[in-house]
Length: 182
Image (cartoon, rainbow, N blue to C red; front, side):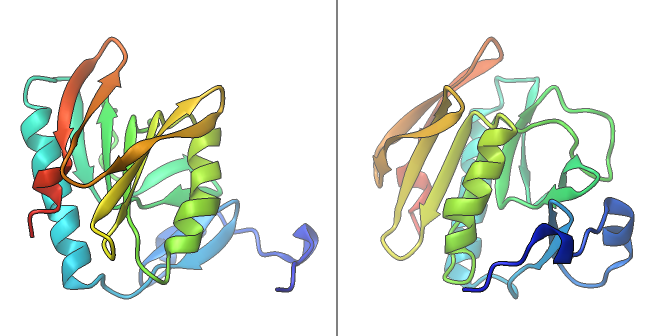
């Protein structure tokens, strides 16, 4: 694979992004076209994640589950995770500016490498406490927790639950059995 020097890479901003047609993510000023509409299994899993989060967060009045929302990290970096949890949501309705507590990415063949590597580093650098990778092919999820600036695998889950602890805000048991019930 050919690696380009930084001076040869484009450097776009959020203002540029707003004028583009189609679905894009902008990471460190470099645009990434998002894959075509996800397949049905991907969509079902993402829907189930959202439903499970909404149910579990009812008691957590400060936290919300959001599907596919733009998270503007800075003027040159904007991503759109499959699902996320954010606490103490700001009033900006155009995009999310606060760091999410949890991000879920449902893997697809075209995004798997970016989700596992590039986004994992990006999310860790921006202090996302939990990163959950959902693998449709094997119907399991990997839960990573940020510890000392790096993600540590907490386990693989199919039918089990995982206890998320959003320090001083809320805690809840998330059922992966509900997610994979498709």
